[in-house]
Figure 1: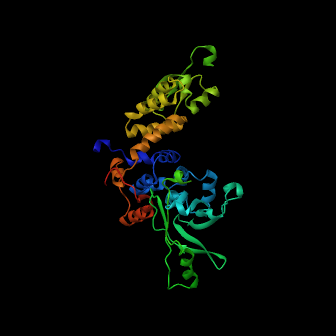
Figure 2: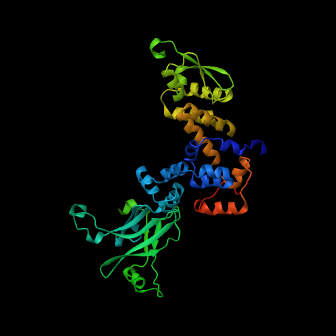
Figure 3: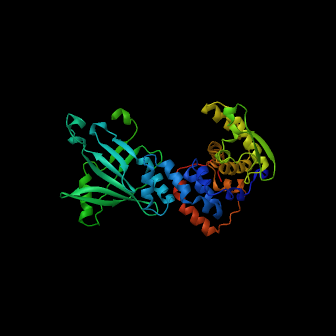
Length: 217
Length: 163
C-alpha cells in the first residue's frame, strides 16, 4: 500500500513529551519495534520518559515513589522495565500443588528485587492470626542488576546460620502458573555448596500453582 | 460571561495560514490554552493559534462542537470520539496530536494518542519501516546490537505481521 506510506519525519517531528503519551498504551515490545526500525526513532523511544510510562503501566504492585527510588539503582527506566517485565508474572501468592502440605509462598517487592517468602504455617496456632503475627522465612530473592538483568539467590540455613546461595532463573513465562525451585548438588564445589541440597532434600522440587488460589486460601 | 448574560459568546480563532473560524466560547474553552487567553481578557479580537494550520483547526473545531454538545455522559463522549477519529489517516492524526498538545486539550490528546498507538500496536519492525517509509540506516552491526539489547521484549509475543 505505497499510497499509505507516511514519512518517518512525521513521527520524528512529534515533540518529546508526546511520545510517552502515545507509547503508554503500547507494550514494551511495540516500543522496541519502533526503536529497532531506525536510529532516529531509537533515540526518541529510548528516553526515560517513555520507559517511565512503561514501568508505571506494568508496575501495578509498585507505587510511583518506589519506581523513582528503584531508578537510582539502575542505568535507565528501560533497564528497570526489563526487570519488571521479567518478574511481573511471579508476583503474588503461590500455593502448593498438593494442598495437604499447606505451603504458601508470597512473592513481594524488596528493594530493586522481589523476595519469595514461605509462610511458616506449621507455627500458626489454632487461633490463626489472632494468635500472633505470621511467621515467614525468605525462600529466594531475585535482584535487579544495573542493566535490568537478574540475579537469583536461594536462602538457606546451615548449622544455625543464614546463608544465601547463588542460582539462576531459567525463564519466566508470562502466563506461568507453576513455580518450580530446583536444587542440584554440585559435587565439585566446596563444602558450603554441598550442604545446600540437604536443606531441600525433604522436598527438592516445590510445585506451587496460582490457579484455584481463592479456593485454597 | 456568556452564561450570565444569556447571549452565547463567539470567539474567532485564526490558524497559522490565516484562516478565520468562529466557534462558541463554551466549546472553545475545552482547550486550556484558549481558556487561559479568555480568562486573561485576550479574547476580544481574534485569537491567533500559531502552531495549528487551517485544515487541522477545522477538524479540531468540529470535535469541540461535537463533544461539547454531548451532555455529561462519558460513554457517549467516548463513542463520539471513536467515530470522529475512525476515518482519519495517520498524517491527520499526527497533526491533531500536535494541535491537541498545543491547545492543551487532554481528552482529544489522549484519544488521538491511543488511536496512533493502535496503528503501531503488535507490528513487526519490518511493518513499521514499510508503513512509515523509514529507511533503515543502521549498519548491520548496529542493527544486530540494537536487536540484542531489546531481545528481552521479544520473548513469547507474536506480531500480527510476520515480517
